[in-house]
Amino acid sequence: MRRVGTLLAALTLLAAACTDEKPGLDFPSTEATAPPADPSTSPVDRSAGSAAVAMDALCVEPVFPSPSPASGDVEPEITEIQRRVEIVRGLEYLDPVVSEAVTGTEMARRVTEVFEIQYPKDFYARRTRAWVTIGVLPQGVSLREALLSFGRGGIVGYYDPATGGLVYIGTGDLGFGETLTLAHELTHAIDDQHFDFTRLDPLANGCRDEEFMAALGAVEGSAQFFATEVLREFPAPVGADDVGIAGDLGVLDAVPPFLLELQVWPYNYGHGFIIALERRGGLKLVNRALRKLPVSTEQVLHPERYPNDLPQPVDVPALGSARWEDLDVMQVGEEWLRALLGLHVDQATANGAAAGWDGGVYRAWANGEQVAVAMRTVWDSSVDARQFRDAMELWIGEGDVAADVRLEADARVMAIFATDDATLELISSAF
Image 1 (cartoon, rainbow, N blue to C red):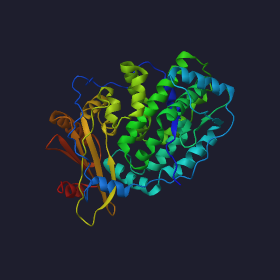
Image 2: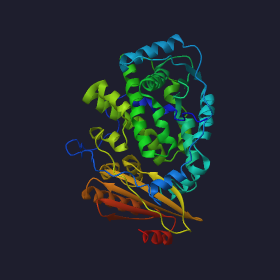
Image 3: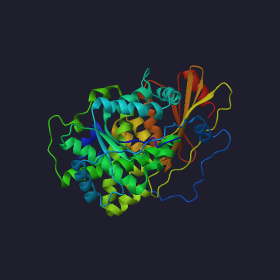
Image 4: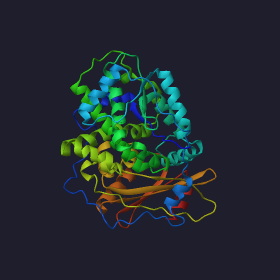
């Protein structure tokens, strides 16, 4: 029996939540020029040979054992934090939330246990080959092992929608870090009880990466925002050995910069998204964003584009050669491209070049040891398309992968990546 596999976690880096500013949002405002939703947007191409059909075929859905509801006593200290969350959240718990304090070693064991099911080995081995070919992962790095390192070193607490309970690294001394972690996870619990976070599971398990990342931005952003409000309204003492902030940062050294950026993105930019919505429309608009989750990272990065600016479907057709087998297909959104560009160009250039995104997908193939990737993106305007093309040309020049990029009609850009120059030339000629 399948169960909900999406654990909603608090990170070692949780202390970044304690700010009044939009974390990291240094994009120029596009509120005046943000395009409206296009009612004529066509459905995703699911004809034979399309990228969407290939993605469905390649996706491996995890199968979890049937969960047991969390059980146990709710300690008075936890009940008090729940009361504080209710006050700042403007909602009431519909069911009690059981909290369990564990050691860091036990947390790593539990994260690993879920990880072994949630991240299928074959799928992530294929995606590793695609990402190494693109150049966002170094040679010799396993995407799956890097994700596991992040989970073991970065997670200090999690809420499980399948059981309705939460687990956190705790010492029994509810100082600043533990209170912040608990407030974060208890916000997940109260939000889940009102807005049903099992809706995230089909996105994650169906390999709908861009939609899942956008939804996670709203969910984690809410937890960041209201946990911060709890500490603002009800200050807690900061201790030198505060586990909620210290964590095992050394383990994160094994996580490549591109992947680390993607993993912390929902917390930092999701926080900024919720701040913007709360300032614009109060708790009513925040609640709306949890009922109607954002569908793209663009909507989270540019809150004024939520909910009307919808992405266009993009396709990369099959190669039509029996020697080349599909290896991986993935939706690529504004944040994924922004993180990619940030590896080799300055962040301001990366932010600006990714900001006109309107849809994207890559498709990877393998022929023995050879790997090729075709990434097609569509942009709000031809100016935005040229800006992204120019940034990719700089990126390619600064990197060390075989790659090429070119403009296409209708504000589209095609980027090709390959394991070697001969393969690059071969695949480029197919498009």
